[in-house]
Image (cartoon, rainbow, N blue to C red; front, side):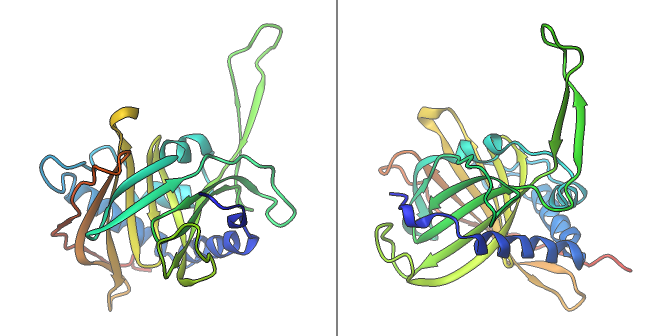
Length: 269
C-alpha cells in the first residue's frame, strides 16, 4: 500500500523545519505550548468511557525545550507504536489509516541530519514523520554501566526533534494519483512518551496515543483547531474533538465533539 514513489523528497523536510524555526523565532512556541497545556489540564476526560488525556505530561516549558532540540529522542518509541493498519471515523466519515514501519535509512546529502522516517496513508492523503538532528542540537555525553572488559564507556547522543508533513488529496484511494493534492501543510511534533505524540500544524493540535494490548489496541486522536486573537495570543476555535481507531475494519467508534473554550495571551515583552 505504501507506494515506492512516496519516498521522502527533501523539500518536505525543509518545509517542516522552517515551520519549527518560525515557531521558535517569534515566540509562538511558548503560546502554543501554553494552549496545549491548558487543554490537557482542563479536559483530561473528554467523555466518560472514552480515551482520556491523563497520561500526557506536556508543559509549555517542555514543549519549547524539545522543539529546540534540547532532548535526545528515541525514534522507535516515537513512531513504532503507531505502525500498522487502523480503522475509524473522522468527522463521521469512514477512514482507513496505514502507518508504515520505522525506516532508519542513513542520512543523505539532501537531508544530512535525518535520523528516521515513517510514511503513512491517512485516509485521504499521505503523511511523513521525521526525526532529525537540528543544526543547533546539543551533544549529550553520559556514562553507562561498564560491561565486561570496558571501563565506564562514554555514550554520546545528539538532541533531536520530531517533524512531519501531510499532503491531502482529492480522493481516498492510496493507489490513486498522489499528485492530485488539495492541501499540504507541515507539522512539528512533541514526543510525550512511548506511544504518545502531540502534533501541531499551523491551525490544529492533535494529541495522539496508542492504548491497550496488541489484540485490543486503540489509537486515539484528541485535539482542536486554534486561531490567533487580536492580542497576539491564541484561542480554541469550535471546541475539541476525538477520533478513536481500532485494528478491525468492523469496529469504528463514534466521532466525538466536546466543548472546549480556552484563550491564552502572548507573553509580555
